[in-house]
Image (cartoon, rainbow, N blue to C red):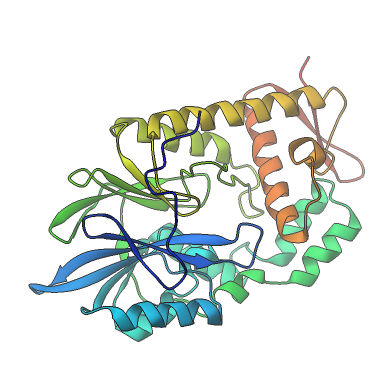
Length: 342
């Protein structure tokens, strides 16, 4: 069952659309199959004067900067805060540039800030080579590994520079924005410490990537945390949204604003359980994550999509192993495989 969509026509790039009092929707292009991101402008005040808070910043491309310049040029009050939900390049990409343009501080959680720096600098267990080693251990073939290696540090292409200072957000913080209280709600599984923002007075949740109206959020296991139970963490985080009223207006990072948060949470649980069942059924013989890509994603995947698909396959296999539904074995060829327990 799909949620209700009160706004079916998104703003054109460079324009804004007010979806609730003081809450404005922007849409920016992305250079991927998922071709857009939703960003948000919140009417705010600073030292008793009108101002703006930006939530998420877009991918670090010249055309996105140009669209921001159009929007910033029309604002009649300064930007005094930049909130970043998580470290992914479509969200953090232009945070440093916007900080330079406005002088506004960047607000984000420590887990996201520190991960951004580690991924950008390929340090602390992050980077192309650790990823290739992880995927090789999970059976990915030489051709696709080579294609991933050629991409090198694709993160740095979407994030030309990083903020070097930030205001740290914690789960449960209440942030005053525009005379209303917004609660920081941290979720896990999609990224290390993803921050959503909920305003009870407005009846609005800025969900970031944690809850999307149609597509499922990518849940991956990364090389630095190979044993992570990312899917369990994600589903536990989703369940916290059941505390919010069903009529909450959810403003996601991709897709359309929607109403129907409880049904959407239930649909995501059902979706992931179905994927777990399909993988379990496919493992009557030992299978690697790479062997199972076509089972999870029965379509042609480009190199960018292979990276996310491998991470997601590993996340689901880890969940099945921890649930006692699959048994892992490490082969003499160095490849990790899984089979049904009985």
